[in-house]
Image (cartoon, rainbow, N blue to C red; front, top):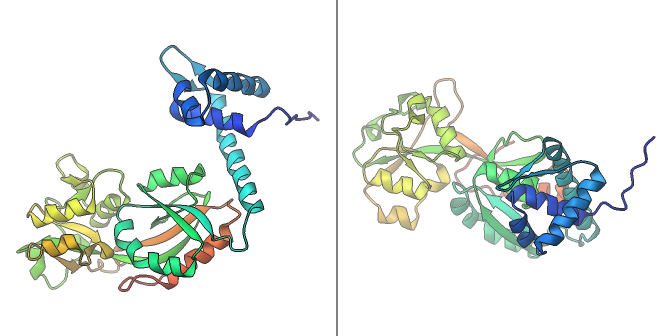
Length: 317
């Protein structure tokens, strides 16, 4: 049996290698790691010698990760994540839900949901120091996998076997329509009743955009002629300007300073399920790494949030 010598393997060197892989540049990686470029380059060479393989292909213009390097660096991320978990477990306080907690939130949820729960969270977990970060689902999942986030709030499912999650509540979709729109007079509106030519969508990369297109079965909405916005607030103003209509999560249709100023220019109305179909909407949940030793405590935090689901949303099992 071949013996593996771990004495020369340094977590710091793994961090250096991952920084180079992410930035594709030795100088910028050195700046991020707080060391000189020669020192970082030397440690990378020592790591490659220890592993017996080249991690990077160096050219005059760019740095590329070798095929074998991709495999090794994928494992390096796991090693660093588990090492961080070891330290967190060793330094856990009597209340594990105390201290800094990095939480990512999707932009179509955070501004409308967080104000409803932050006070309750601070009252129940006074030692918890939330560090909130907004981002699209794919970006947050990647940061969670890398250990840059501790947990995230997003629409489920996330389709990632490395994550554990708990559903918090079900949020229905509503139609946001300009004043005078024909759909305001309809007794009932189902997804199949929605016209595709004036459906306003979020930009590519937002999960809400994909949900809206899938729900309405409007392949034409994916084309280049569709009008897009970078945020729900911009969509709100586009509807008020009479450009079309949109689907909006229930929490985002509540009265805000923006909607109050636009009083009379737009109106929200319920969207009914298609015959025999499910209620149009999304399940909001909390997710964390399945390997995180704080998993049971995150589940406890998720249970607390589920018990305090916003009024008007639907409970989940």
